[in-house]
Image (tube, rainbow, N blue to C red; front, side):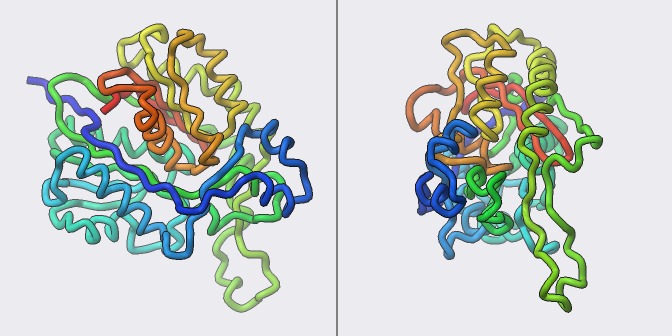
Length: 326
């Protein structure tokens, strides 16, 4: 019998502090309405000092395991997608596995920026389908505020913190479709770090600390031309048509990009679209599970519905797949 995979459980951690546009606008010397018009964002979550990246990832992962009814000892692998684990080693995944008591699990991090979660989900799905692991814990976790220039008018109003996790396990029918992914290295300077972790930083305090930088119009132009075809490839790979998609959960980068994708894809009028960015901001690799959690908590979606997901980020890279709502 062919072995398939699906998401068995979902868990998230949203930071305790919600920051409204008034605070951001005052700092940047801009109007609150400008932020809404440019991004759709009204609030974003900032992690408190005790909400470390490890703490948020662990909390989300523990909730996902509880939702799936899976014990930590049954986890075969932990994969964490993050851009903000500022210690090169050990991996955040190994720290999360230890904190959870998942002593039988392999553990590693991946870095695919805001597309990290669908990349990690593809790896987890393939591990389960191949029999490499029976259960894979896939986590997207970010503390973007650690690398954010809070006085940069192109990024300071967009990004936020949070974590989301899913447990991937075996199923007798496809619950996670084949991934459609790719990269465009010609756009490497559209979004990324402003510098590298140069050893000279230790000896010269005048050197600027690397921060997150972005050319928003370049990202928007690329996303508005490249993402819809990639999303259609994910739908095709799942053996479906766009008309059969019940839910659309894109990376929560910008509400303008989300609405443009909805228009280009020609989704059904009753297709549920995730717009978590309005209250959560752009949480990079955590945004897709956080957005899915918001829909489930609001009762807008239910188990078994077909959802199209797609993420994109620095590289520029992208990945997406059709999933069955857990």
